[in-house]
Length: 212
Image (tube, rainbow, N blue to C red; front, side):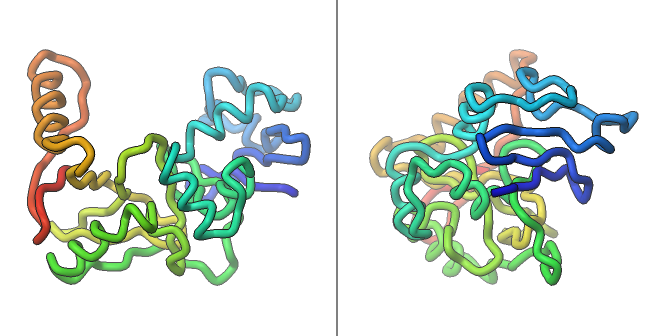
């Protein structure tokens, strides 16, 4: 199995059987090349499994969401490479993991209204990251229900075929009441304290509060 790693439309590296990560020779000689991790410096040698696997695992969700994705896709939760090949087109950072289909054009599927957004949010526990939807391939670490989205002209859209997300939508967690307000408060306090915290906005779909 060979799984490519991309930065935009540039081939950065390949994950080969072993598994090992091997940088593309053209990437290694590029003036603007960067390592995919501080533990994987730019080098023509193979990055071994004991370094590669923990990095890959940190791109996947945890606990219940990971189990659900595995069942939905028919892939064992321990098959890190198989999972990322299916849901690694939009991960944390600017890298894309997985093959790019010849007829796939990155784009966005608009969410038409609040009712449609409510249906998506309501379905997340059963279908984390909309796994299995045509063209949808995304993954983020953590056990909280969340969904990478793109905000386009003030409207929410779902990235497809490897198009980049711009925001992370996090609905209120019924197991942790007030999670939206708590995260908004913490990030706002951090930013006002001078820390480089992400900006946050809260809003409401039909069913309740969300943050992004």
